[in-house]
Length: 184
Image (cartoon, rainbow, N blue to C red):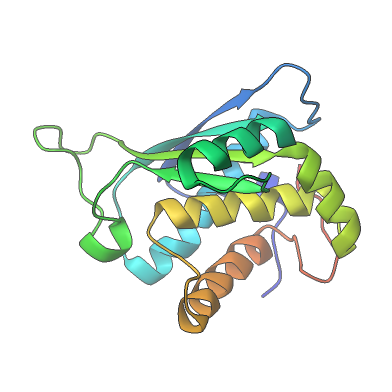
């Protein structure tokens, strides 16, 4: 599938995104860029799930120290990580269907929060031989899919999640081989 530049991706918004940047975290990309990446992840998942409802999430752009602290506090793992997702739904949309909160038809549903270590994303981009943009996009897509109920505990689950991740990234021209079309 040939990807489209991010500025050309248009679809009915399914996921609203609020971006929070911790002081000292330098990411020279506009909030709109992150919102469109999240939308592409939701669109790719929607193709599989048939979900039509709207949702919202919060993205925290932080450093290794913050992700280390969050990983230790919430997962009991005492080391930094690249991305964490904190789902707010007991029943993930993938398992239970995407529905609006009771009494609020059509209102966006808060899926949860995502935290990304910008430091780790920069290092991983170099290690994997692709752009910083592609690594940030991958981590955000990965986080959104976790909020939607995807996981990678088994080989089968990992393969299904990877297929949706690659579909979302391909839709915006961020290929796995390090090539990229303009995404702004």
